[in-house]
Image 1: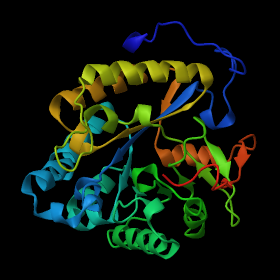
Image 2: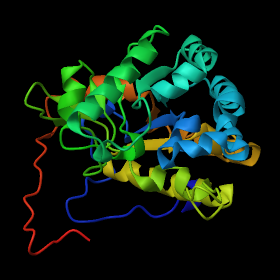
Image 3: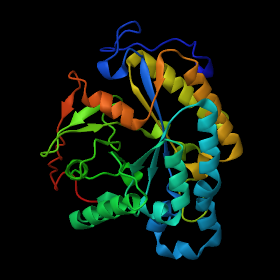
Image 4: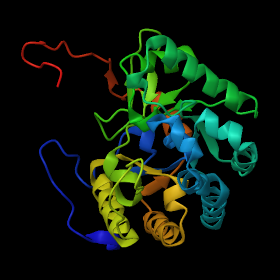
Length: 309
């Protein structure tokens, strides 16, 4: 199938036919594509240990994202006349305020991505709340009022959706039980869930460091282009949300950003794909009366059957 877009479409029980109209949030298109960028910078490494702050190679490896990757990505988005969503941790916002201002000035969406980039699963409820609030404060000082949230590492807790709703955000993009938007009941009010997936993340293809180990393989950008083009092609058949996630310290490098450019051109050449921000998809989804509704239900696990490893 690859980037040609002419391969056979998949079929399966319950699949919507290729000619069937998509749900209302798609506005007549076959699929929606969101280009999202997680500007983690140093915050992606420090949870492994603050000792890495003294490691110049590791810290500069991460600083490449806001210093070089983001400007290149902004130019790419200008070239293709598209808007994207940037999930920015509070620590990154504090360290690189001019970068945040540049993203905002270009008209892109800026969303909440924790403060410290620590996994919420490792935090107590009070710690998760404090980290969430610190991120809001850091973005707020730069004039940013986010409407969306993405958990660090996508590792949300069962309490995270209620926190997102409590602070008045519209959507979350952390959970993986669908490939279309749905309404997530929180006990307060519903938020929109915009599901991501590891197969649409550049980290799995490009991330590498000797220490800390964030990945052990560096794949060719050609592989990523084939993978993502094939996924989008199939998602058009099933009327899905294609939530692409890139990291500027990874996809901001020359051959990788050119592969991203070719993927965007492939998507834009399809008249049945809408390329929009996460906020736009969430607002459409919230207005779609046919959207599925779900409630987070934690598992009750028998300790005798499943002891902690």
